[in-house]
Amino acid sequence: MGRLIINTGMTANGAFEAPAPEAHGGWLVTDPHSMQAGLEMWRAADAMVLGRRTYEGLSKAWPALAGAPGFEAYAARMNSMPKYVASRTLSGPLEWNAALLEGDPAGAVKALKEEHSGDLIVPCAGELARGLIAGGLVDEFWFTVSPYLWDSGPRIFEGIGPVRLEPVSTTTFPSGVVRLCYRPAPQGAPAAG
Image (cartoon, rainbow, N blue to C red):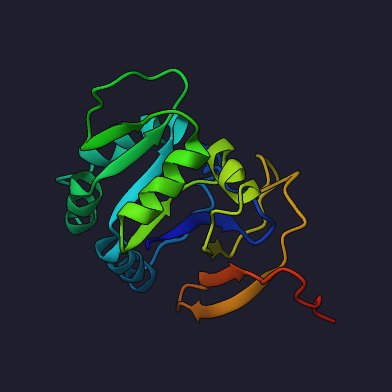
């Protein structure tokens, strides 16, 4: 059975939507080490699971980066890997090596987990991710935290919880970026303290 992983970047104070570049250059910090770790994660994944809004944004951005210096390998993987899109408004066929999930997203994702043996990555923190968390379908959370406090934008997973998490791993990169990996704690696990 495959694992469903929520993978998202955010600031130290939980902002997760990258601001427009004109907004002080943005908060996303990248370095060769964290970029390589991200690429390895995507190479090991079976597929990507997306909501409509994330699909529409990424399906425009990644094909445009195919020839960008320093992004060739990353863009090649992002553009070639299979994608499953949950949407109430889109109709198939979809572009960008994507297939539309039919029916209830939670039921469709549960079936995908049974069909795949590897990782299914959800690269967002929006409506789809919230529904998957509420449905108990998420196996791990991977947060890439940029060393910024950002004053605007929505905060990750507002209104979700409580969901007790237990640590899996922590990786600190030279730029100050930290990757935190958690899994949902078993039901009845004692609170930290």
